[in-house]
Structure formats: C-alpha cells, structure tokens
Image 1 (tube, rainbow, N blue to C red):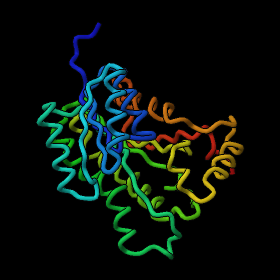
Image 2 (image 1 turned 30 degrees about the vertical axis):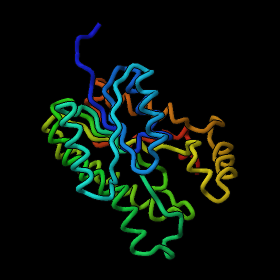
Image 3 (image 1 turned 45 degrees about the vertical axis):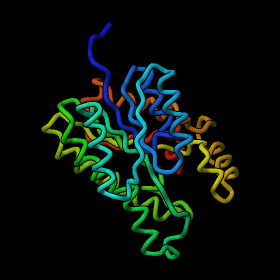
Image 4 (image 1 turned 60 degrees about the vertical axis):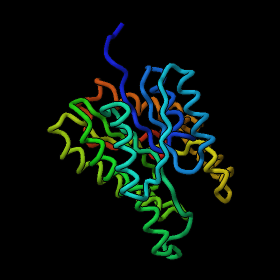
Length: 250
C-alpha cells in the first residue's frame, strides 16, 4: 500500500456530466477533490456527497470562470485548504447555439472568456502551486475542427483552447508539469436535451460511430485519469480524441 498523500484535484464544472464523472474517478483513488460550480449548487452538492462515498474528500467551490478575479480566488482557496494542487481539470464550458453571423459581440466574448480565457488564467494560477508531476488537463470537442451547425462560438473557443494547450505545454515543461486536452465525442448528458433536435442528433451520431455506441462520461473520465497518472509524464501538449472512431469517417 502506498504512503503517498492523497492528490489535490480541482475539477471546474465538476457538478454534472463529464465533470462529475471525472470527480468521481479521482475520488475512487482517494483524492482530495475540489468540485467547482457556478449556478447549479444542488448538482454540485450531490457530486460532492458521492465523492465522499467513493472514498475521496470533497470541497465545494463556487466561481464564475468568466471573471479572472473569481478564478484567482478559486485557486487561492484550493491553496488555503490543501497547500498545493496536483491536478487541474479545466472542464467548465458555456455556449450560445447560434450561427456565427447571428452572434452578438457580447455572446462571443462570454463564450470565449468561459471556454478559452479561463484555461489561461487557471493555468497561470494553478501552476504557481504545482510541483513537478503536476497535471493540467482541458476538455474540448470535435467542433474545434469540424463545422457543426449553430456551434460557431463554442467551436472557435475550443479551437483556441487547443492552441493554448500547446503553448502552455512548452512553457510549463521545464517545471515538470504536463498540459494536455481531451477532445470528446458526443456524450449523452442533459446538455443535449436543451438543443433543438438533440435526441435525433445523438441517434445519428450513434449510428455513424463505427462501434455503434456513444462515448460515455466514464470513458472520458478514464482518459483524463490516465493523463494525470505517472505513466503519462511523456505525453505533452497533445489533443487526445475520444469519440469511438466517429471522426475517422469521411
């Protein structure tokens, strides 16, 4: 049995969906999991409760990641409670489902700030309290490289996030910190219920995926957990696609 202390893990947007699955995966290894949320406290409390049931220690931290001051306060609270940070998972995201020509400047700025700029500020703050072996892992989607109807603001913000991953990876490599991104295929979460024809879209994606099955939140969480492991120390600045082979087809 290892005598290593439990790792301190911050998961932004950790209350629901993929973020929740990631938080629970680290909890199974006994991690100290900081579950960040912005609006849905009830879901975050449920995740925190389940983190404890899985063997982890849970802390709830509310923050609006559009605001740099809120991000700085968030990481400072992690430092106050844990003294350091081992793993940052930048998962929180937001979006406006409109075509690019219909986006307002306010909507564009909102999505870019939440999905792309947040990673920059989080990495700046988190790397300050990380030592060699630290991990920064972001979540992206196929819309960063493929045009999806109504996905312009989100897709471009995720493309920016993927580019930032490479730059941060080079800058932080000397500290022994790795920076990578997991680009997930369609995962059946409640987000799809809010999308027009979301159920039909999921069915079409499932039918087009070579294995005939959608990627699950637990499968994405497993890849994130691997990237946070010692075995992944040599993986640096990469975008790992987890989509069941969907994007392989022309």
